[in-house]
Image: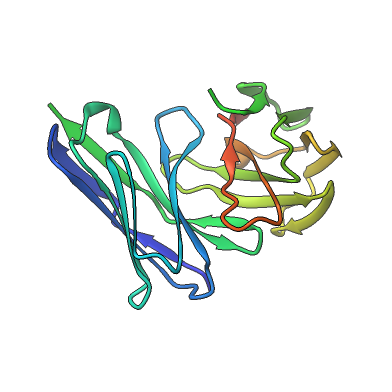
Length: 109
Length: 114
């Protein structure tokens, strides 16, 4: 069945790069997504990547996809305190999304 | 600001009450979703509507009853809930039929069942 795994916590200093990792199991997934959730809020779409791509860059965000290993990563350059949140990776399940457990990113100044 | 609007933001209800959660989007999306999220957990899929028809029900108890009156609105009717149903209920929408159709989420309704 489908399953998405993420490490639970990441702590970085302001200005450093953050790398959040994710593994997924469904090889038929065509799109993979990253969402951000701040306390008390809904999920904000950050970026997504098509499975035939290796990399996608969007301002401070870089997504890397290793389809052979079913590994997805999100790199945040120049991490700011406002980036502190929970980050979920997600893969498609029929017409919906299934989410990883989320990685809590803590940014200290 | 989110383009998916959910009301109310907070709801406290007793186990014998009947209440409804509402969700609205005006992006022309033809798929709408209900997710349930417990604290420190990922969102879990409850229901999916495609073209106003229920297409996925993830074995949700009948005390939760979804309704999609039109392509812009999605309701979740609640009746005889249990305290363990307390959670953040998230609505989302997406454009069907296009590759890479991400889900757009509302800010959720935080439900407390007493």
